[in-house]
Image 1 (cartoon, rainbow, N blue to C red):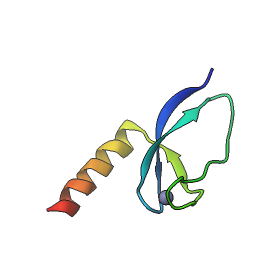
Image 2 (cartoon, protein in one colour):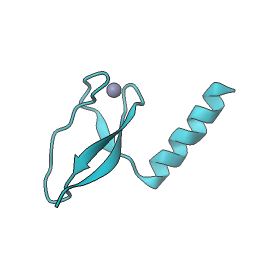
Image 3 (tube, rainbow, N blue to C red):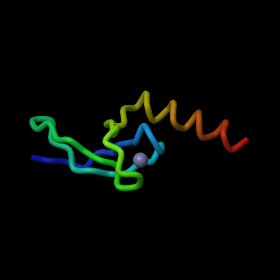
Image 4 (cartoon, rainbow, N blue to C red):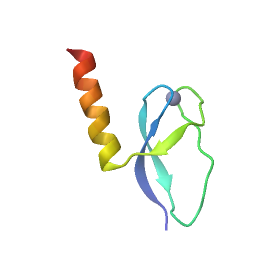
Length: 58
Ligand SMILES: [Zn+2]
């Protein structure tokens, strides 16, 4: 059964929810920039993203 997970785009750093099924490998593309460099967001990636975003806004 698919569930919705947060993914992020390596190109534009966009974050967006997508259906995710670990039994299926799906080629995904970013809904923002169309890049296929999309990765499942892990807790580590989320922390890095938040840290980067916080420093970029400063
Ligand atoms: Zn993108």
